[in-house]
Image (cartoon, rainbow, N blue to C red; front, side, top):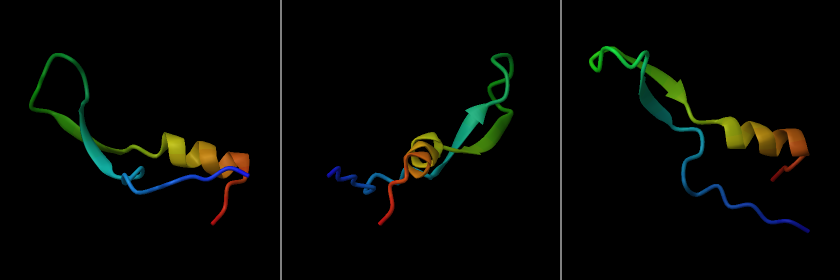
Length: 45
């Protein structure tokens, strides 16, 4: 049996620089890679 704790807000939004040249252009993205991997493994509540 494997237990998973999702207390850290795995699917929260972060702002990423689109390219390394302009620091003021930002794009919102979701940090949901780990959450998607858990769903692919079949982890359910």
